[in-house]
Length: 112
Image (cartoon, rainbow, N blue to C red; front, side, top):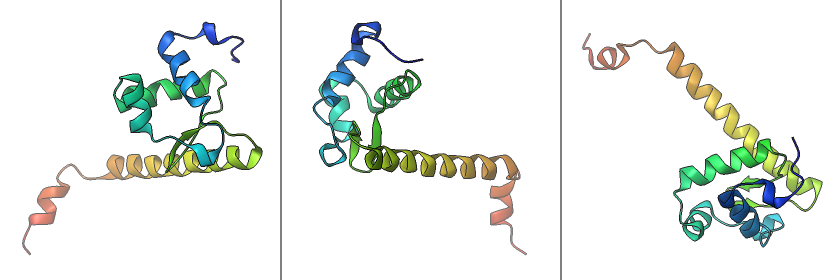
């Protein structure tokens, strides 16, 4: 789905986009905590809303320096690579958690 108008979004999402409009380009990235503070929301809510906006067709990049609107393919790619690395880390965590024995902690403390 691609958005057609800013007003198609709920107010919080509109405010996120309005704020990020001032952060076009990777060099102008804004820390998530600063963005969340400015919007008077917690960081997890911000992350959730940005995930939603991604699904709505909004290219919002994130790197270690924060969130930004990519202005070219190189910046878009940098944001995508960051997301891919995060996805790999999450997948590794899920696999480790899934495969772990439930008594793993007791096994660690067992003396031979």
